[in-house]
Image (cartoon, rainbow, N blue to C red):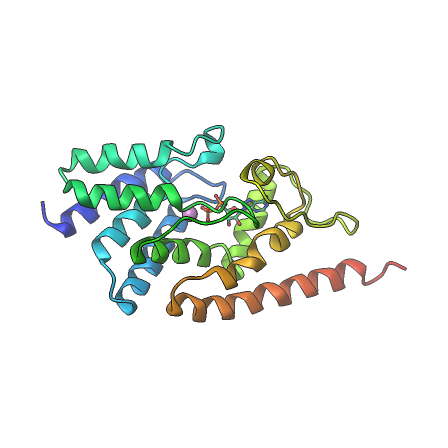
Amino acid sequence: MTKNEIINKTQDFIKNKFENETSGHDWWHIHRVWKTAAYIAKQESADSFVVELAALLHDIADWKMHDGDMDVSPKAAKEWLTGLEVDEDIIDSVCDIIFNLSFKGAGVKQTITTLEGKIVQDADRLDAIGAIGIARAFTFGGAFGQLIYHPEASPQYHTTFEEYKNNHSTTVNHFYEKLLLLKDRMHTETAKKIATERHLVMEKFLADLKTEWGAFSD
Ligand code: ADP
Ligand code: NI
């Protein structure tokens, strides 16, 4: 199978799997991350085959839906790629990226080391900020029964993955706990540039929301 055929088959597989998912990991999230990652890979001269496969497979089984088991996604990705007879070293690179990808809290150290991994992480994080990031956050908040905002609930900065995972906060707080931190956590120059613009969109949104919230109260 050619690289293109492998990408196409993986695209179809993931598209079918995620078409009816609406909690923030829908097919269009994966599509955007895939395309963004491919763009960054080109700009940064990375291995685009590994980048595209990892982007397509990065949310194949999310830990939030599996009681915090971090191994489910890389295992599922390995099974799929083995079935397509992809080279073992490519499979290892892709699975390593997927395992290390997920945000685990503001104070928890990240373990991504390869350029390809950094690119997929940048692309995934870019999709969590800006106008799309705002839409996704409130979609997630709705699905998990969170309040939009509470003027007296202050953000919490989690120092362990356990704390972050068990957090019950408002969706506006999620911006302070994660989304506004992402701009400074981009790895590649290409992503940093895009993130700067998207960060401003969120800052303006939060300022407007608070202005409207308090507009007629004393
Ligand atoms: P990723 O796939 O980028 O690691 P997550 O699985 O953590 O992202 O979250 C998926 C989407 O849901 C993101 O857009 C993220 O900002 C949003 N999200 C995650 N946790 C919360 C939360 N507690 N409140 C609001 N939005 C959230
Ligand atoms: Ni994702």
